[in-house]
Amino acid sequence: MKRTTELIQEYKWIICISIILVTNQCTSQKGPDISVYSSSEDGDRLTRKADVHFTADIKSLLPVITIDEGKRFQKIEGFGATFNEAGMICINSLDKIAQDKVFKMLFEADSGAGFTLMKSPIAACDFASAGPWYSYNDTPNDTTMSHFNIERDLGPNGLIPFIKKASGFGKFGIETTMDFAPDWMYFSLKNGEKHVKPLYYAALAKYYSKYIKAYADNGISLGYLNPFNEPENSWYSNITYKAIGELIKDFIIPQFAADGITTKIQLCETSNRPEAIRKFPVILDDPEIRKYISTLTVHGYDWDKFSSLTDLHNKYPDLPIWQTEVCYARVGNLPTNEPPGGPDHLPVFDFSDGEFWGNMIMNDIKNHVSAWLYWNMILDQDGGPWLVSPEHGDPDDNRQHPVVIINRNTLEITFTGLYYYLAHFSRFIRPGAWHIDCTGGSDKLNFAGFLNSDNSIVLNIINNGNETSCKISWNKKMVIQELKSHSITTLKWKNHE
Image (cartoon, rainbow, N blue to C red; front, side):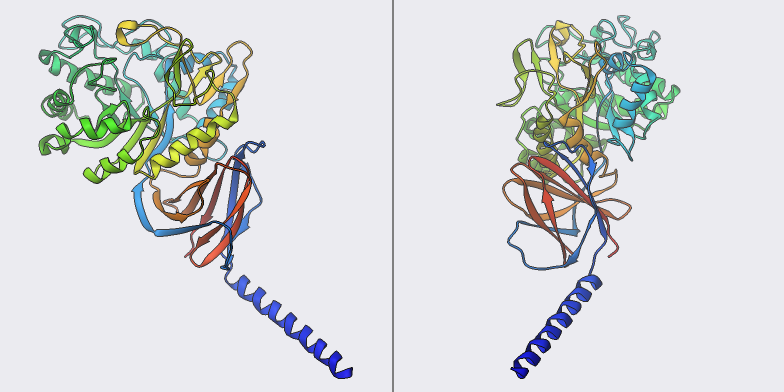
């Protein structure tokens, strides 16, 4: 009996010593603290959760996400949305305190979405809602651009006050594109005849140059010019990509050189992802034009043809790909730009809609997208106000979905599900970050990793199913992370390795 008691006591000491040794081993292998943020269907909204930390790796039956920052893909250049007069009209319905709240939520990096890349249209588009259709020179045959002016953009609902107000809350780049040149430059505005007359190519190059200089004179730098939005289609300019290549090489580039303009040229924005691989080669396969192209830009109105972007990247691996426009839209009760199973009405107030957009952003990035921009940043409770100009492809009752909804009657502000999912990318993944290798997971988890220029690592995980957990494996360390039902979770830590 005495010997049995002694053995039990010895075993107790062995167990205690083993626990101490394991604990010391885990402590010695402890990794950096991890900041955790969540947005979820149960009420989290970019909510800071309790920090977690890496420990020594152990086997687990949970889905495993393995991160390898040594394997890098594309560099990230930014996230954001679009300045339109419609948004400024909505902002101007609020008092200054409420206005500042909206701008902070959109552009401040510490407490808001921290948008770093924005879009600003050249003259009128479908949400240039402060007046009738306009260009910067509506004087026919004014090829010297002596009547060029940006007066409309300087008005209280104009793009310049909108951009300058936003710039007080954050730092962002701007890309710009154009639905239509001045009407007088076209053969006609009839479908199939909306081609710019070649005799006006030089005048159009001057038009772009004066526009960029006029904005610079008002303190706004336009980093990227897209000569046409969704060209070679029936709704906007019918001008072909072959003609656009000629315009860029023989007119825009010489005009910019003469005027000392350093704005980069993007290859005109396609209406969907697969369109790019069909239409870009006529320009990009000509080395004399390709050398002037900085970026390939696509829209997301195919909704899910992400792999076509990998095909585009593989064909032109030296050129970054940006997704520069997508939204829900319907004219009256008829969906005009909505995916199968899209929303019943616009705009969408329900947070759960954000999951659709979060997966789109994630899947674009996993197919080599370097920047991701939504269309309207701010609209009202009716998905407007909109411009009506049928000859320019802009119908009445053109309801769309924005990042932020401002009810101009009640002054209530709604940050949509889209806002929160997009903010999990824009706040934590900063310009210059690398998309890094992440593997594993499960069919309900959509995820991607990033290495910021400050050496911090970011992992975004979208859980498209019920509440679950996963194991995250990094540098022979691990952490178990709970994932709320239908949520997006961001984990961020400093890489001290």
